[in-house]
Image 1: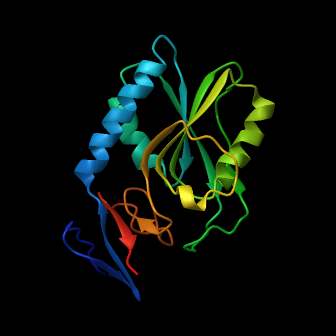
Image 2: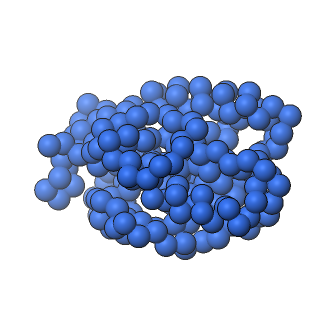
Length: 187
């Protein structure tokens, strides 16, 4: 069994791929605090439902919620568009539906990363039938150069280049989500 150790000065070698440090744990946590402060201000007097998109967003949502200063609820969707690949398949599948009723509620979709925007577009179409009072999208990462669909991301942690990243909830074939920092595939 191999042991995974993380040092922000070290590269990770996974098969033939080399990943280098990109966003440190400290940088990520500081930005999440800023985002949580803004969301708390924007939803003052309301009780939004944060809807995490599994599996990737669970760590980000957990840290975001810890910094939210208003009452809120949490639920999860599970979607799949990547499988074990480094690029999106172009097809989104629903693997787990919501447990809560969002009719007339303020919802905040929480994503780990917005790449092409396909998953957000898919969720927007689903929520048209649910009739929430409002819907906003919060994503830790966004790849502006990769966007193919007209979607609005209301809260963005970091705009990043169109490169493959792992760590802090982001996976490579379901592994490496447990890294505290984010690493990028080296060229």
